[in-house]
Amino acid sequence: MSKDGSERARTKVVVTGGAGFYGSVLVRQLLAAGYQVHVIDNLMYGPHTILELFIRPNFKFTHGDILDRKLLGEVLQDADAVVHLAALVGYPLCKKEPERARAVNVQGTTNVIELLPAQSKLIYASTGSNYGEVMGVCTEETPLNPLSLYGETKTLAEHMCMERPNSVSFRFATAFGLSPRLRLDLMINDFAWQALVQRFLVVYEKHFRRTFIHVWDMARAVTFTLDHWEEMQNEVFNVGQDSMNYTKEDIIMLLQKKLDFMVHFAEVGTDADKRDYAVSYAKINRLGFFTEVDIHRGTDELISGLTPRGLPPPVLQRLSGLAQLGGVCGLLGRATGAAHRGGRVLGIPPRRPPRALGASLITPRRAELDLLDRGATERFFNDARPQLVLHAAVDGGGIGYMREHPGSVLYNNLLMNTHVLHAAYLAGAARFVGVSSVCAYPRDAPVPMREADLWAGYPEPTNGPYGLSKRVLMEQGRAYRAQYGLSVAFPMPTNLYGPRDNFSPERSHVVPALIRRCLEAVDSGAEEIVVWGTGKATRELLYVEDCADAVLAMAERWDSPEPVNIGNGVEVPVAELVAAIARACGYEGRLVWDTSKPDGQPRKCLDTSRAAQGFGWRAAVDLDEGLRRTVAWYRSSR
Image (cartoon, rainbow, N blue to C red; front, side, top):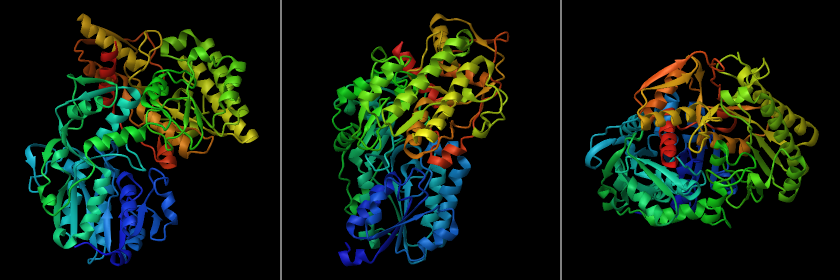
């Protein structure tokens, strides 16, 4: 029986994690339905998703964590219902931070159960990931078989919730769709964005099947349940629609009818996400709940929403493939996107949608602007009048290139950095983000490297001039902030790799160089590959799209000249890295180490706590998955 408006107005609904992807949509639906809504969220991804709700008289917000029992108890003490969403979501993040995943997903749920008054309703957002890899069609009675830590924690939390009377759990289908806290790690969202902007996708195990649900319908399930509590309490429900069951290949074929892009269905390698199942939703359908947003409407919405207004897909595609300013054609530049609300952005075409989708993107070809020419750079900036400048242009390469060109590397980088920073200031830019490098650290810096150790010694000699140019850029930015008030930020990424890297013999870094050589060896049948160094040095490798997300997050939420390490905190011996690349390429020959060649810096691994605490960023793509994507891209582009 549906509630009337007066009853809803008297009902207080607490939403944990209400500023997230799902929560920010749900909260708006609850407010529109007339409920009193109280959100508790640690704002891991910032407050922008709910800021405009603060003026609503029936909205209340508490900034905090569900692991804080005292604070949580105060929030829950007078709740009529709780929708428990707060969690570390997805197998990549839980794999990277297993202890935190167990704490938030399990202990956090325990806190909610123990502190919630017995008479209060509890709705728990579980997941279809609990089913894992199952033969046949899953019903609510199917034994659970989670394949990841994420699934394990959600399965345990669901079990605890259902032991509590007056509770309901939802096993949602795979989410997709637009939200104030947009996620591009969701399969359909990711496919649509890559198809729209990068125009190229690599898809593993195309036959894997999922059922999908739009985030709007996920929110509707909660309001439906609150209106039909007597019929639904103390039950678990699969939430979705049978008609929304598709394979990965089905989704790609649908998108190809709407967008022009290339796809590579990889036959070598596997998808780290092993979920493959079909689900029945008959139980909730019998009560009258059916989804409203189908796959066609949902993907049309994504394409429309992910395309900046005034820039139709063909123009966006041209921007994605051209341009040089800010290093747009480099590895990071191709992966990064940015926008400033209502303003103009100079630099880099987008990898993911900006916070505000109406910004202009200004991305000149290299032939149109030489950053070594001060006058040309200043004239261009004066004409463009950007509000935000992302500067990632460098003259650099691998160890061999750095050793052979120390003078030009230092000269060119000092000039480019100086010209771009000064031109940004003269043109009245409000914000300058200069991408620095882990190469700026001293050779013998303590590991994990912390930003405070940056000036404790000279950089590793093989890339010393390059590292010094990055230090100078950061000091220039600090000086411009002090004298001119220019807002600056300096992300300091570790070694990057990914699709569209430089695979040329002269300039390539270790990952693209070894991928090229391994694939050439596979093609030629070579029995061995010679690798520089001893293999004992260590490196930290970051997938380029993770770095792009970090640069954007920093541009949006970090206002300080203090540099910020950007990495995943995982230290990998070079010997293990080389073996992983060989596996990804299918190379089974010998690896021979040329110890007469340098190792470079002995150890590289970053302390990334400043990024996590300062603007809520963490890497999502692990090394094996990143290598699979990179190898597949290079295979298809050779």
